[in-house]
Length: 280
Image (tube, rainbow, N blue to C red):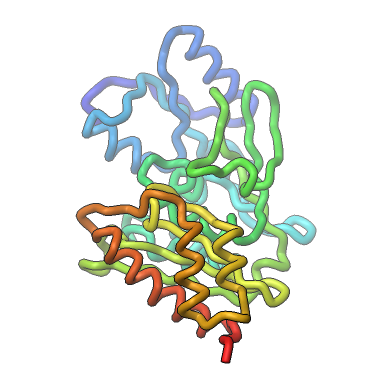
């Protein structure tokens, strides 16, 4: 339980949720949208976040959608990571999300909650960054559709009163050769040291990272270096490090030097696995 009282609402439509948020703001409350609730409970107990009004999005049909529409996969923001893992409609996403937390937690953690959360790993965003996915965002100004690579900069940039409704991915990306590698220094389900997801499209290998810096990211500059076939794998990797966002994390899970060591070995493995031809 949270150490403070709050009002609970479960709207049945996008319009109702937005109007409710605006009404609560007018009443000088601090409303918060709620998908799975694991982070609200965890951080709320530590007094890192506070809300006196929770708006549960799980009653909104669009937020629980899951399936194909034309040539696109629609994933609602309130779907649990476990549901996504078991259905395997997006193999790279399943491979990445199944490594988040433990089995029990993944039944509660939602895809939207993981992407929009405050804990910096947020591994579930990596496959969407690699697949040029789009996000459906709803708010007081209406509903908008944006490329995730244009609105995700360290975090998903949402205006006041907005929430994530769906993530949309073109079907062609779901069949691409891919790999997701998570490295831990400690136990199997402990916090990760780092995660690297990769996808190969039209001969070009894409990379997205979590746990290297204080936020998930995809770097086109790093990708260009990592795809430079005139260089050996080692030289590609080391030259790509020049474009790492700073600072590289240095925490209880591992020092920045150790992270770079593990990242170098991980990238070498991915290049070998996914078919990055090496310079001779």
